[in-house]
Length: 156
Image 1 (cartoon, one colour):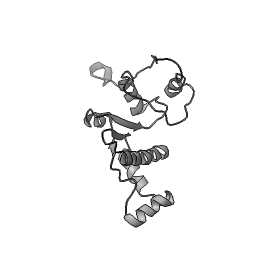
Image 2 (image 1 turned 90 degrees about the vertical axis):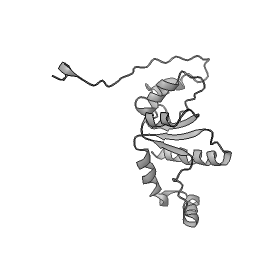
Image 3 (image 1 turned 135 degrees about the vertical axis):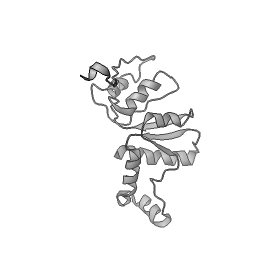
Image 4 (image 1 turned 30 degrees about the horizontal axis):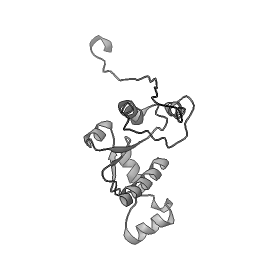
């Protein structure tokens, strides 16, 4: 969560200074609200500048003005069709919301995937990074798993 929190603070500053309100900034993780709440209680670990900002103005850096906290993909969809910057967890894109959004959005050339962490060999992000500098179009083969509710005799 540390890297995501750092990125959110940086992006929040950019959104404010560059007036990027036309783009929604989203943190998508099933613990987004708990992460923000926990971080907001640990301000003594922040930089002196952020601590001073809180001491003098009672302005908590984690009281985001531009970040939408979402705990599932449906919440992201409910935000509407405005352009979005979505931060997710599991930077490998092997599992989780990030992988699901990648599958959903990757075919649209208007979308961008930004990798913010090192890539472990054998992961989707490692495969994506290998395309850097090569001509498009790129093709990635993915295996998708879905949960299916068992019914009737399948339960026996």
